[in-house]
Length: 359
Length: 267
Image (tube, rainbow over all chains, first blue to last red):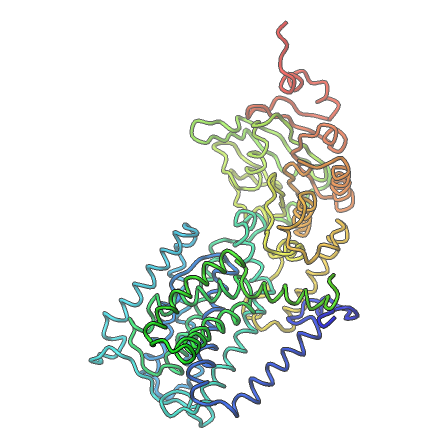
Protein backbone atom coordinates (compact mmCIF):
# COMPACT_ATOMS: atom_id res chain seq x y z
CA UNK A 1 0.00 0.00 0.00
CA UNK A 2 2.98 2.26 0.57
CA UNK A 3 4.23 2.03 -2.97
CA UNK A 4 1.01 1.74 -4.91
CA UNK A 5 0.71 3.40 -8.28
CA UNK A 6 -3.08 3.08 -8.36
CA UNK A 7 -4.77 6.33 -9.25
CA UNK A 8 -1.67 7.87 -10.82
CA UNK A 9 -2.81 8.03 -14.41
CA UNK A 10 -0.46 9.08 -17.15
CA UNK A 11 -2.17 11.07 -19.83
CA UNK A 12 0.84 11.62 -22.10
CA UNK A 13 3.77 9.56 -23.32
CA UNK A 14 6.01 12.20 -21.83
CA UNK A 15 4.82 11.63 -18.28
CA UNK A 16 4.98 7.89 -18.87
CA UNK A 17 8.60 8.19 -19.98
CA UNK A 18 9.68 10.42 -17.08
CA UNK A 19 12.73 9.47 -15.01
CA UNK A 20 10.60 9.18 -11.89
CA UNK A 21 7.14 8.29 -13.14
CA UNK A 22 5.76 7.58 -9.68
CA UNK A 23 4.83 10.24 -7.16
CA UNK A 24 6.49 8.27 -4.36
CA UNK A 25 9.76 8.23 -6.30
CA UNK A 26 9.53 11.95 -6.92
CA UNK A 27 9.02 12.63 -3.22
CA UNK A 28 11.86 10.31 -2.22
CA UNK A 29 14.21 11.87 -4.74
CA UNK A 30 13.34 15.44 -3.73
CA UNK A 31 13.86 14.59 -0.07
CA UNK A 32 17.21 13.06 -0.86
CA UNK A 33 18.28 16.10 -2.87
CA UNK A 34 17.08 18.39 -0.09
CA UNK A 35 19.18 16.53 2.46
CA UNK A 36 22.19 16.33 0.15
CA UNK A 37 22.21 20.00 -0.84
CA UNK A 38 20.75 21.84 2.13
CA UNK A 39 21.48 19.77 5.24
CA UNK A 40 24.69 17.82 4.75
CA UNK A 41 26.85 20.84 3.74
CA UNK A 42 26.11 22.43 7.13
CA UNK A 43 26.84 19.40 9.24
CA UNK A 44 29.65 17.78 7.25
CA UNK A 45 33.00 17.30 8.95
CA UNK A 46 36.36 16.24 7.61
CA UNK A 47 35.91 12.57 8.52
CA UNK A 48 32.57 12.25 6.72
CA UNK A 49 33.95 14.11 3.76
CA UNK A 50 37.22 12.18 3.32
CA UNK A 51 36.08 8.74 4.40
CA UNK A 52 32.56 8.44 3.09
CA UNK A 53 30.81 11.15 1.11
CA UNK A 54 33.41 12.33 -1.39
CA UNK A 55 34.74 8.86 -2.24
CA UNK A 56 31.14 7.67 -2.54
CA UNK A 57 30.33 10.43 -5.03
CA UNK A 58 33.50 9.90 -7.05
CA UNK A 59 33.12 6.14 -7.21
CA UNK A 60 29.44 6.53 -8.11
CA UNK A 61 30.57 8.46 -11.15
CA UNK A 62 33.15 5.82 -12.05
CA UNK A 63 30.54 3.10 -11.53
CA UNK A 64 28.06 4.90 -13.80
CA UNK A 65 30.82 5.09 -16.40
CA UNK A 66 31.64 1.42 -16.20
CA UNK A 67 27.96 0.50 -16.05
CA UNK A 68 27.35 2.31 -19.32
CA UNK A 69 30.04 0.23 -20.96
CA UNK A 70 29.58 -3.11 -19.23
CA UNK A 71 26.03 -3.04 -17.94
CA UNK A 72 24.32 -1.31 -20.84
CA UNK A 73 26.53 -2.04 -23.82
CA UNK A 74 27.80 -5.43 -22.67
CA UNK A 75 31.51 -4.74 -23.19
CA UNK A 76 33.47 -5.99 -20.21
CA UNK A 77 36.26 -3.65 -19.16
CA UNK A 78 39.03 -4.00 -16.60
CA UNK A 79 40.73 -0.77 -17.59
CA UNK A 80 38.91 1.58 -15.20
CA UNK A 81 42.04 2.39 -13.22
CA UNK A 82 43.98 3.27 -16.36
CA UNK A 83 41.21 5.54 -17.60
CA UNK A 84 40.88 7.23 -14.24
CA UNK A 85 44.62 7.85 -14.38
CA UNK A 86 44.18 9.51 -17.78
CA UNK A 87 41.60 11.84 -16.22
CA UNK A 88 43.89 12.62 -13.29
CA UNK A 89 47.00 13.29 -15.36
CA UNK A 90 45.07 15.36 -17.91
CA UNK A 91 43.83 17.54 -15.07
CA UNK A 92 47.36 17.88 -13.73
CA UNK A 93 48.83 18.81 -17.12
CA UNK A 94 46.06 21.28 -17.96
CA UNK A 95 46.49 22.84 -14.52
CA UNK A 96 50.20 23.41 -15.15
CA UNK A 97 49.72 24.84 -18.63
CA UNK A 98 46.63 26.94 -17.95
CA UNK A 99 46.92 28.22 -14.37
CA UNK A 100 43.91 30.51 -14.73
CA UNK A 101 41.43 28.05 -16.13
CA UNK A 102 38.34 27.25 -14.06
CA UNK A 103 38.60 23.89 -12.31
CA UNK A 104 35.17 22.76 -13.52
CA UNK A 105 36.24 23.31 -17.12
CA UNK A 106 39.58 21.58 -16.53
CA UNK A 107 37.81 18.52 -15.18
CA UNK A 108 35.36 18.37 -18.07
CA UNK A 109 38.20 18.70 -20.60
CA UNK A 110 40.04 15.89 -18.80
CA UNK A 111 36.90 13.83 -19.29
CA UNK A 112 36.94 14.55 -23.00
CA UNK A 113 40.62 13.56 -23.26
CA UNK A 114 39.83 10.31 -21.47
CA UNK A 115 36.95 9.76 -23.89
CA UNK A 116 39.38 10.04 -26.81
CA UNK A 117 41.73 7.54 -25.16
CA UNK A 118 38.73 5.29 -24.49
CA UNK A 119 37.82 5.28 -28.17
CA UNK A 120 41.34 4.14 -29.08
CA UNK A 121 41.28 1.29 -26.57
CA UNK A 122 37.73 0.46 -27.60
CA UNK A 123 38.72 -0.31 -31.17
CA UNK A 124 39.46 -4.00 -30.49
CA UNK A 125 35.88 -4.43 -29.26
CA UNK A 126 34.66 -4.77 -32.81
CA UNK A 127 36.60 -7.98 -33.21
CA UNK A 128 36.67 -9.51 -29.76
CA UNK A 129 34.05 -10.13 -27.13
CA UNK A 130 33.64 -11.22 -23.54
CA UNK A 131 36.69 -12.56 -21.77
CA UNK A 132 39.02 -11.67 -24.59
CA UNK A 133 37.90 -8.07 -24.56
CA UNK A 134 38.34 -8.00 -20.79
CA UNK A 135 41.95 -9.07 -21.27
CA UNK A 136 42.46 -6.45 -23.98
CA UNK A 137 41.18 -3.72 -21.66
CA UNK A 138 43.40 -5.13 -18.93
CA UNK A 139 46.27 -4.39 -21.29
CA UNK A 140 45.12 -0.78 -21.46
CA UNK A 141 45.18 -0.64 -17.67
CA UNK A 142 48.78 -1.81 -17.49
CA UNK A 143 49.90 0.21 -20.48
CA UNK A 144 48.45 3.50 -19.24
CA UNK A 145 49.82 3.13 -15.72
CA UNK A 146 53.21 2.17 -17.16
CA UNK A 147 53.10 5.17 -19.48
CA UNK A 148 52.39 7.67 -16.70
CA UNK A 149 55.17 6.13 -14.68
CA UNK A 150 57.73 5.96 -17.44
CA UNK A 151 57.37 9.28 -19.23
CA UNK A 152 58.51 12.06 -16.85
CA UNK A 153 56.69 14.72 -18.90
CA UNK A 154 53.43 13.53 -17.40
CA UNK A 155 54.53 14.27 -13.83
CA UNK A 156 56.50 17.40 -14.77
CA UNK A 157 59.86 15.71 -14.07
CA UNK A 158 59.30 15.68 -10.31
CA UNK A 159 61.75 13.50 -8.37
CA UNK A 160 59.15 11.39 -6.63
CA UNK A 161 56.97 10.81 -9.68
CA UNK A 162 54.09 12.19 -7.66
CA UNK A 163 51.64 14.74 -8.97
CA UNK A 164 50.23 17.31 -6.58
CA UNK A 165 47.21 19.50 -7.06
CA UNK A 166 47.39 23.26 -6.67
CA UNK A 167 44.64 25.31 -5.13
CA UNK A 168 41.70 26.23 -7.36
CA UNK A 169 38.55 28.04 -6.40
CA UNK A 170 34.93 28.09 -7.41
CA UNK A 171 33.12 31.36 -6.54
CA UNK A 172 36.07 32.37 -4.38
CA UNK A 173 36.02 29.23 -2.25
CA UNK A 174 38.88 26.76 -2.70
CA UNK A 175 37.69 23.32 -3.86
CA UNK A 176 41.08 21.70 -4.41
CA UNK A 177 44.24 21.70 -2.33
CA UNK A 178 44.76 21.28 1.39
CA UNK A 179 42.87 24.43 2.34
CA UNK A 180 39.59 23.44 0.73
CA UNK A 181 36.79 23.25 3.30
CA UNK A 182 34.85 19.99 3.57
CA UNK A 183 31.53 21.41 2.42
CA UNK A 184 33.15 22.91 -0.70
CA UNK A 185 34.74 19.70 -1.97
CA UNK A 186 31.57 17.81 -1.14
CA UNK A 187 29.28 20.25 -2.95
CA UNK A 188 31.61 20.45 -5.94
CA UNK A 189 31.51 16.67 -6.37
CA UNK A 190 27.80 16.53 -5.65
CA UNK A 191 26.91 19.07 -8.34
CA UNK A 192 28.99 17.23 -10.95
CA UNK A 193 27.58 13.85 -9.96
CA UNK A 194 23.96 15.02 -10.04
CA UNK A 195 24.32 16.75 -13.41
CA UNK A 196 26.23 13.91 -15.02
CA UNK A 197 23.86 11.29 -13.59
CA UNK A 198 20.89 13.01 -15.18
CA UNK A 199 22.78 13.22 -18.46
CA UNK A 200 23.57 9.50 -18.26
CA UNK A 201 19.99 8.60 -17.42
CA UNK A 202 18.75 10.70 -20.33
CA UNK A 203 21.13 8.99 -22.71
CA UNK A 204 20.04 5.60 -21.47
CA UNK A 205 16.35 6.27 -21.91
CA UNK A 206 16.70 7.64 -25.42
CA UNK A 207 18.10 6.48 -28.73
CA UNK A 208 21.68 6.01 -27.57
CA UNK A 209 20.78 3.78 -24.63
CA UNK A 210 18.55 1.59 -26.73
CA UNK A 211 21.31 1.17 -29.31
CA UNK A 212 23.71 0.11 -26.55
CA UNK A 213 21.28 -2.38 -25.08
CA UNK A 214 20.48 -3.74 -28.54
CA UNK A 215 24.18 -4.39 -29.13
CA UNK A 216 24.46 -5.97 -25.67
CA UNK A 217 21.53 -8.32 -26.06
CA UNK A 218 21.89 -9.46 -29.68
CA UNK A 219 24.39 -7.75 -31.92
CA UNK A 220 23.26 -9.50 -35.11
CA UNK A 221 19.68 -8.40 -34.71
CA UNK A 222 20.89 -4.91 -33.84
CA UNK A 223 22.73 -4.74 -37.14
CA UNK A 224 19.60 -5.83 -39.00
CA UNK A 225 17.57 -2.97 -37.62
CA UNK A 226 20.29 -0.54 -38.59
CA UNK A 227 22.43 -0.11 -35.48
CA UNK A 228 26.03 0.19 -36.63
CA UNK A 229 28.04 -2.05 -34.24
CA UNK A 230 31.37 -0.23 -34.41
CA UNK A 231 29.94 3.24 -33.94
CA UNK A 232 27.68 2.15 -31.12
CA UNK A 233 30.41 0.28 -29.24
CA UNK A 234 32.84 3.16 -29.64
CA UNK A 235 30.24 5.65 -28.43
CA UNK A 236 29.80 3.50 -25.33
CA UNK A 237 33.56 3.44 -24.83
CA UNK A 238 33.78 7.20 -25.31
CA UNK A 239 30.96 8.16 -22.98
CA UNK A 240 31.92 5.58 -20.38
CA UNK A 241 35.52 6.84 -20.46
CA UNK A 242 34.30 10.41 -20.14
CA UNK A 243 32.57 9.55 -16.86
CA UNK A 244 35.52 7.52 -15.63
CA UNK A 245 37.91 10.32 -16.65
CA UNK A 246 35.90 12.90 -14.71
CA UNK A 247 35.88 10.52 -11.75
CA UNK A 248 39.67 10.16 -12.05
CA UNK A 249 40.11 13.92 -12.23
CA UNK A 250 38.02 14.40 -9.09
CA UNK A 251 39.79 11.52 -7.37
CA UNK A 252 43.10 13.28 -7.91
CA UNK A 253 42.21 16.96 -7.68
CA UNK A 254 39.50 17.01 -5.05
CA UNK A 255 39.85 13.83 -3.06
CA UNK A 256 43.50 12.84 -2.71
CA UNK A 257 45.33 16.02 -3.74
CA UNK A 258 48.55 14.15 -4.40
CA UNK A 259 48.92 10.82 -6.13
CA UNK A 260 51.47 8.32 -7.29
CA UNK A 261 50.16 6.48 -10.30
CA UNK A 262 51.10 2.86 -9.58
CA UNK A 263 49.63 3.11 -6.11
CA UNK A 264 46.51 5.14 -6.68
CA UNK A 265 45.30 3.71 -9.98
CA UNK A 266 46.27 0.11 -9.51
CA UNK A 267 44.02 -2.63 -10.81
CA UNK A 268 43.41 -3.82 -7.24
CA UNK A 269 42.57 -0.38 -5.87
CA UNK A 270 40.39 0.87 -8.72
CA UNK A 271 39.56 -1.46 -11.59
CA UNK A 272 38.33 -4.44 -9.61
CA UNK A 273 36.51 -2.49 -6.89
CA UNK A 274 34.61 -0.49 -9.52
CA UNK A 275 33.71 -3.71 -11.29
CA UNK A 276 32.52 -5.11 -7.93
CA UNK A 277 30.42 -1.99 -7.49
CA UNK A 278 28.46 -2.54 -10.65
CA UNK A 279 28.13 -6.28 -10.07
CA UNK A 280 26.99 -5.84 -6.48
CA UNK A 281 24.91 -2.78 -7.33
CA UNK A 282 23.36 -4.19 -10.46
CA UNK A 283 24.52 -4.35 -14.06
CA UNK A 284 22.52 -2.09 -16.31
CA UNK A 285 21.01 0.01 -13.55
CA UNK A 286 21.65 3.62 -12.62
CA UNK A 287 20.44 3.07 -9.09
CA UNK A 288 22.74 0.07 -8.94
CA UNK A 289 25.78 2.23 -9.65
CA UNK A 290 25.02 4.35 -6.58
CA UNK A 291 24.09 1.44 -4.35
CA UNK A 292 27.20 -0.46 -5.40
CA UNK A 293 29.46 2.54 -4.79
CA UNK A 294 27.87 3.14 -1.39
CA UNK A 295 28.27 -0.52 -0.47
CA UNK A 296 31.89 -0.79 -1.54
CA UNK A 297 32.87 2.50 0.12
CA UNK A 298 31.13 1.87 3.42
CA UNK A 299 31.71 -1.85 3.87
CA UNK A 300 35.41 -1.60 4.88
CA UNK A 301 34.53 1.16 7.34
CA UNK A 302 31.73 -0.92 8.82
CA UNK A 303 33.88 -4.04 8.99
CA UNK A 304 36.72 -2.16 10.62
CA UNK A 305 34.37 -0.70 13.17
CA UNK A 306 32.95 -4.14 13.88
CA UNK A 307 36.22 -6.06 14.06
CA UNK A 308 38.69 -3.57 15.47
CA UNK A 309 36.56 -1.36 17.67
CA UNK A 310 33.97 -3.88 18.83
CA UNK A 311 35.72 -7.25 18.83
CA UNK A 312 39.22 -5.89 19.39
CA UNK A 313 41.12 -7.64 16.61
CA UNK A 314 44.39 -6.09 15.48
CA UNK A 315 44.14 -3.86 12.41
CA UNK A 316 46.19 -6.23 10.28
CA UNK A 317 44.05 -9.27 11.09
CA UNK A 318 40.94 -7.24 10.43
CA UNK A 319 42.32 -6.25 7.03
CA UNK A 320 42.87 -9.91 6.16
CA UNK A 321 39.34 -10.75 7.21
CA UNK A 322 38.08 -7.88 5.13
CA UNK A 323 39.69 -9.23 1.97
CA UNK A 324 38.26 -12.69 2.66
CA UNK A 325 34.81 -11.26 3.25
CA UNK A 326 35.07 -9.39 -0.04
CA UNK A 327 35.75 -12.55 -1.96
CA UNK A 328 32.93 -14.31 -0.19
CA UNK A 329 30.50 -11.50 -0.92
CA UNK A 330 31.36 -11.49 -4.62
CA UNK A 331 30.64 -15.20 -4.88
CA UNK A 332 27.43 -14.91 -2.87
CA UNK A 333 26.18 -12.06 -5.03
CA UNK A 334 27.02 -13.77 -8.29
CA UNK A 335 25.18 -16.91 -7.22
CA UNK A 336 22.26 -15.56 -5.21
CA UNK A 337 21.49 -12.24 -6.87
CA UNK A 338 23.38 -11.71 -10.12
CA UNK A 339 21.30 -8.59 -10.74
CA UNK A 340 22.60 -7.02 -7.59
CA UNK A 341 21.22 -4.63 -5.02
CA UNK A 342 19.12 -2.83 -7.63
CA UNK A 343 17.11 -6.02 -8.14
CA UNK A 344 16.74 -6.46 -4.38
CA UNK A 345 15.37 -2.94 -4.25
CA UNK A 346 12.85 -3.61 -7.00
CA UNK A 347 11.74 -6.78 -5.20
CA UNK A 348 11.36 -4.73 -2.04
CA UNK A 349 9.32 -2.16 -3.98
CA UNK A 350 7.06 -4.92 -5.26
CA UNK A 351 6.57 -6.13 -1.68
CA UNK A 352 5.87 -2.60 -0.46
CA UNK A 353 3.30 -2.15 -3.20
CA UNK A 354 1.24 -5.03 -1.84
CA UNK A 355 1.98 -4.62 1.83
CA UNK A 356 0.28 -5.49 4.17
CA UNK A 357 -1.45 -8.01 1.92
CA UNK A 358 0.41 -11.11 0.78
CA UNK A 359 -0.58 -10.53 -2.87
CA UNK B 1 18.93 2.29 -54.71
CA UNK B 2 17.16 3.80 -51.83
CA UNK B 3 13.95 3.87 -49.94
CA UNK B 4 12.64 6.56 -52.29
CA UNK B 5 13.29 4.44 -55.39
CA UNK B 6 11.47 1.57 -53.77
CA UNK B 7 8.52 3.74 -52.84
CA UNK B 8 8.21 5.01 -56.41
CA UNK B 9 7.72 1.54 -57.89
CA UNK B 10 4.03 0.91 -58.62
CA UNK B 11 2.32 -2.03 -56.92
CA UNK B 12 2.55 -5.24 -58.86
CA UNK B 13 5.86 -4.34 -60.50
CA UNK B 14 9.18 -5.96 -59.63
CA UNK B 15 10.73 -4.63 -56.43
CA UNK B 16 13.63 -7.04 -56.02
CA UNK B 17 15.00 -9.25 -58.73
CA UNK B 18 17.57 -11.90 -57.93
CA UNK B 19 19.57 -13.00 -60.93
CA UNK B 20 21.58 -16.22 -60.96
CA UNK B 21 22.45 -16.06 -57.30
CA UNK B 22 25.02 -18.62 -56.15
CA UNK B 23 26.35 -18.85 -52.65
CA UNK B 24 29.05 -21.22 -51.47
CA UNK B 25 30.72 -21.68 -48.11
CA UNK B 26 33.98 -23.30 -49.09
CA UNK B 27 32.90 -26.48 -50.84
CA UNK B 28 29.32 -26.37 -49.61
CA UNK B 29 27.02 -24.93 -52.20
CA UNK B 30 24.13 -23.34 -50.35
CA UNK B 31 22.57 -21.79 -53.43
CA UNK B 32 23.17 -22.54 -57.10
CA UNK B 33 22.02 -20.23 -59.83
CA UNK B 34 18.75 -19.19 -58.24
CA UNK B 35 16.70 -16.50 -59.98
CA UNK B 36 13.35 -15.07 -59.05
CA UNK B 37 11.71 -11.74 -58.55
CA UNK B 38 9.50 -10.29 -55.86
CA UNK B 39 6.75 -7.95 -56.96
CA UNK B 40 5.81 -5.00 -54.88
CA UNK B 41 2.83 -5.52 -52.62
CA UNK B 42 2.65 -9.31 -52.88
CA UNK B 43 3.05 -12.10 -50.37
CA UNK B 44 5.89 -14.14 -51.72
CA UNK B 45 6.75 -17.49 -50.18
CA UNK B 46 10.02 -19.39 -50.32
CA UNK B 47 9.53 -23.05 -49.48
CA UNK B 48 11.57 -26.19 -49.62
CA UNK B 49 12.73 -29.12 -47.49
CA UNK B 50 15.21 -28.57 -44.65
CA UNK B 51 18.59 -27.36 -45.80
CA UNK B 52 17.26 -26.18 -49.14
CA UNK B 53 18.86 -22.76 -48.75
CA UNK B 54 15.77 -20.74 -47.86
CA UNK B 55 17.27 -18.85 -44.94
CA UNK B 56 20.47 -18.31 -46.93
CA UNK B 57 18.32 -16.70 -49.60
CA UNK B 58 16.86 -14.24 -47.06
CA UNK B 59 20.34 -13.57 -45.73
CA UNK B 60 21.47 -12.72 -49.25
CA UNK B 61 18.52 -10.37 -49.73
CA UNK B 62 19.21 -8.38 -46.60
CA UNK B 63 22.95 -8.38 -46.90
CA UNK B 64 24.09 -10.84 -44.25
CA UNK B 65 25.67 -13.10 -46.86
CA UNK B 66 27.45 -11.88 -49.94
CA UNK B 67 26.53 -14.07 -52.92
CA UNK B 68 29.49 -15.78 -54.60
CA UNK B 69 28.07 -14.80 -57.95
CA UNK B 70 24.95 -13.23 -59.37
CA UNK B 71 23.34 -9.85 -58.97
CA UNK B 72 20.51 -8.41 -56.98
CA UNK B 73 18.44 -5.80 -58.68
CA UNK B 74 16.90 -3.76 -55.93
CA UNK B 75 14.36 -1.15 -56.94
CA UNK B 76 15.86 -0.78 -60.38
CA UNK B 77 19.54 -0.69 -59.46
CA UNK B 78 21.92 -3.61 -59.86
CA UNK B 79 24.18 -4.54 -57.03
CA UNK B 80 25.89 -7.74 -56.10
CA UNK B 81 26.00 -7.20 -52.39
CA UNK B 82 24.17 -5.48 -49.60
CA UNK B 83 25.08 -4.33 -46.13
CA UNK B 84 22.62 -5.13 -43.34
CA UNK B 85 22.58 -1.50 -42.29
CA UNK B 86 21.96 -0.34 -45.86
CA UNK B 87 19.19 -2.89 -46.22
CA UNK B 88 17.56 -1.53 -43.08
CA UNK B 89 17.87 2.00 -44.41
CA UNK B 90 16.33 1.06 -47.74
CA UNK B 91 13.22 -0.30 -46.07
CA UNK B 92 13.92 -4.00 -45.58
CA UNK B 93 13.02 -5.45 -42.18
CA UNK B 94 13.19 -9.06 -41.11
CA UNK B 95 12.47 -11.54 -38.39
CA UNK B 96 14.52 -14.59 -37.56
CA UNK B 97 13.86 -18.29 -37.40
CA UNK B 98 15.33 -18.47 -33.91
CA UNK B 99 13.97 -15.42 -32.18
CA UNK B 100 16.53 -12.62 -32.13
CA UNK B 101 14.97 -10.22 -29.66
CA UNK B 102 16.80 -8.05 -27.17
CA UNK B 103 16.07 -10.22 -24.16
CA UNK B 104 16.98 -7.80 -21.41
CA UNK B 105 14.75 -5.02 -22.74
CA UNK B 106 11.02 -4.57 -22.33
CA UNK B 107 8.58 -5.14 -25.17
CA UNK B 108 8.21 -1.41 -25.55
CA UNK B 109 11.96 -0.84 -25.76
CA UNK B 110 12.33 -3.68 -28.24
CA UNK B 111 9.77 -2.06 -30.47
CA UNK B 112 11.37 1.34 -29.95
CA UNK B 113 14.65 -0.03 -31.30
CA UNK B 114 12.81 -0.47 -34.58
CA UNK B 115 12.61 3.32 -34.70
CA UNK B 116 16.34 3.92 -34.13
CA UNK B 117 17.13 4.63 -37.76
CA UNK B 118 14.43 7.28 -37.87
CA UNK B 119 15.62 9.11 -34.74
CA UNK B 120 17.89 11.92 -35.77
CA UNK B 121 18.84 13.84 -32.62
CA UNK B 122 22.50 13.69 -31.63
CA UNK B 123 23.79 12.40 -28.33
CA UNK B 124 24.41 15.76 -26.68
CA UNK B 125 20.78 16.69 -27.21
CA UNK B 126 19.82 13.26 -25.92
CA UNK B 127 21.86 13.78 -22.78
CA UNK B 128 20.18 17.11 -22.14
CA UNK B 129 16.78 15.66 -23.09
CA UNK B 130 14.79 18.78 -23.73
CA UNK B 131 12.56 20.18 -26.47
CA UNK B 132 13.32 18.43 -29.77
CA UNK B 133 14.53 15.16 -28.25
CA UNK B 134 11.52 14.78 -26.01
CA UNK B 135 9.26 15.60 -28.93
CA UNK B 136 10.99 13.07 -31.15
CA UNK B 137 10.72 10.40 -28.48
CA UNK B 138 7.00 11.01 -28.11
CA UNK B 139 6.48 10.95 -31.85
CA UNK B 140 8.15 7.57 -32.17
CA UNK B 141 6.47 6.30 -29.07
CA UNK B 142 3.14 7.07 -30.69
CA UNK B 143 4.10 5.08 -33.80
CA UNK B 144 5.18 2.18 -31.64
CA UNK B 145 1.97 2.32 -29.65
CA UNK B 146 0.07 1.80 -32.90
CA UNK B 147 2.02 -1.38 -33.52
CA UNK B 148 1.37 -2.44 -29.92
CA UNK B 149 -2.36 -1.91 -30.47
CA UNK B 150 -2.31 -3.77 -33.74
CA UNK B 151 -0.53 -6.82 -32.33
CA UNK B 152 -2.37 -6.77 -28.98
CA UNK B 153 0.79 -6.33 -26.93
CA UNK B 154 -0.60 -3.78 -24.46
CA UNK B 155 -0.45 -6.00 -21.41
CA UNK B 156 3.20 -6.94 -21.88
CA UNK B 157 4.46 -3.46 -22.70
CA UNK B 158 6.76 -3.33 -19.67
CA UNK B 159 7.67 -7.00 -19.46
CA UNK B 160 11.25 -7.97 -20.34
CA UNK B 161 10.87 -10.07 -23.47
CA UNK B 162 13.16 -12.79 -22.16
CA UNK B 163 10.41 -13.89 -19.79
CA UNK B 164 7.62 -14.01 -22.40
CA UNK B 165 6.28 -17.27 -23.85
CA UNK B 166 7.52 -18.32 -27.27
CA UNK B 167 4.45 -17.36 -29.26
CA UNK B 168 4.41 -13.87 -27.82
CA UNK B 169 8.13 -13.44 -28.46
CA UNK B 170 7.50 -14.25 -32.12
CA UNK B 171 4.80 -11.61 -32.12
CA UNK B 172 7.07 -9.03 -30.47
CA UNK B 173 9.69 -9.76 -33.10
CA UNK B 174 7.14 -9.12 -35.83
CA UNK B 175 6.28 -5.93 -33.96
CA UNK B 176 9.87 -4.78 -33.97
CA UNK B 177 10.08 -5.33 -37.71
CA UNK B 178 6.77 -3.49 -38.20
CA UNK B 179 7.94 -0.58 -36.06
CA UNK B 180 10.55 0.03 -38.76
CA UNK B 181 7.65 0.70 -41.15
CA UNK B 182 9.37 -1.37 -43.82
CA UNK B 183 8.51 -1.56 -47.49
CA UNK B 184 9.64 -5.15 -47.62
CA UNK B 185 9.24 -7.53 -44.70
CA UNK B 186 11.26 -10.73 -44.63
CA UNK B 187 9.76 -13.35 -42.32
CA UNK B 188 11.82 -16.42 -41.55
CA UNK B 189 9.39 -19.11 -40.37
CA UNK B 190 7.04 -16.80 -38.48
CA UNK B 191 4.79 -19.70 -37.51
CA UNK B 192 7.35 -22.31 -36.51
CA UNK B 193 6.48 -24.02 -33.26
CA UNK B 194 3.08 -22.40 -32.89
CA UNK B 195 -0.26 -24.00 -32.21
CA UNK B 196 -3.21 -23.61 -34.56
CA UNK B 197 -4.66 -20.52 -32.86
CA UNK B 198 -1.33 -18.77 -32.81
CA UNK B 199 -0.80 -19.63 -36.47
CA UNK B 200 -4.20 -18.20 -37.32
CA UNK B 201 -3.41 -15.01 -35.42
CA UNK B 202 -0.04 -14.69 -37.10
CA UNK B 203 -1.52 -15.30 -40.57
CA UNK B 204 -4.10 -12.62 -39.91
CA UNK B 205 -1.39 -10.18 -38.84
CA UNK B 206 0.67 -10.91 -41.94
CA UNK B 207 -2.31 -10.53 -44.25
CA UNK B 208 -3.47 -7.32 -42.56
CA UNK B 209 0.00 -5.82 -42.87
CA UNK B 210 0.02 -6.79 -46.52
CA UNK B 211 -3.48 -5.45 -47.21
CA UNK B 212 -3.54 -2.31 -45.12
CA UNK B 213 0.04 -1.09 -45.26
CA UNK B 214 0.74 -2.59 -48.69
CA UNK B 215 3.97 -4.03 -47.35
CA UNK B 216 5.66 -6.55 -49.58
CA UNK B 217 6.15 -9.79 -47.68
CA UNK B 218 8.74 -12.45 -48.36
CA UNK B 219 8.13 -15.43 -46.16
CA UNK B 220 9.67 -18.78 -45.42
CA UNK B 221 7.30 -21.29 -43.94
CA UNK B 222 6.98 -25.03 -43.54
CA UNK B 223 3.26 -25.18 -42.88
CA UNK B 224 1.96 -25.86 -46.39
CA UNK B 225 -1.63 -25.04 -45.45
CA UNK B 226 -0.59 -21.56 -44.38
CA UNK B 227 1.69 -21.03 -47.36
CA UNK B 228 -0.91 -22.12 -49.91
CA UNK B 229 -3.57 -19.96 -48.25
CA UNK B 230 -1.80 -16.67 -47.81
CA UNK B 231 0.86 -16.40 -50.48
CA UNK B 232 0.40 -14.90 -53.92
CA UNK B 233 3.38 -16.59 -55.50
CA UNK B 234 5.78 -19.28 -54.37
CA UNK B 235 9.30 -20.32 -55.23
CA UNK B 236 10.52 -23.78 -54.26
CA UNK B 237 14.16 -24.53 -53.47
CA UNK B 238 15.77 -27.91 -53.02
CA UNK B 239 19.47 -28.47 -52.35
CA UNK B 240 20.14 -24.85 -53.22
CA UNK B 241 18.48 -25.05 -56.63
CA UNK B 242 15.20 -23.60 -57.75
CA UNK B 243 12.91 -26.47 -58.68
CA UNK B 244 9.70 -24.62 -59.23
CA UNK B 245 7.90 -21.33 -59.03
CA UNK B 246 4.48 -19.94 -59.65
CA UNK B 247 1.03 -19.61 -58.16
CA UNK B 248 0.07 -21.83 -55.23
CA UNK B 249 -2.13 -24.07 -57.35
CA UNK B 250 0.64 -24.59 -59.88
CA UNK B 251 3.08 -25.51 -57.15
CA UNK B 252 0.62 -27.99 -55.69
CA UNK B 253 0.62 -29.93 -58.96
CA UNK B 254 4.29 -29.49 -59.79
CA UNK B 255 5.93 -32.91 -60.23
CA UNK B 256 9.42 -31.80 -59.17
CA UNK B 257 8.08 -30.19 -56.00
CA UNK B 258 6.07 -33.25 -55.03
CA UNK B 259 9.13 -35.43 -55.63
CA UNK B 260 11.30 -33.17 -53.49
CA UNK B 261 8.87 -33.27 -50.59
CA UNK B 262 7.64 -36.87 -50.81
CA UNK B 263 10.57 -38.57 -52.51
CA UNK B 264 10.62 -40.19 -55.95
CA UNK B 265 8.82 -43.49 -56.31
CA UNK B 266 10.87 -46.37 -57.64
CA UNK B 267 8.64 -47.49 -60.45
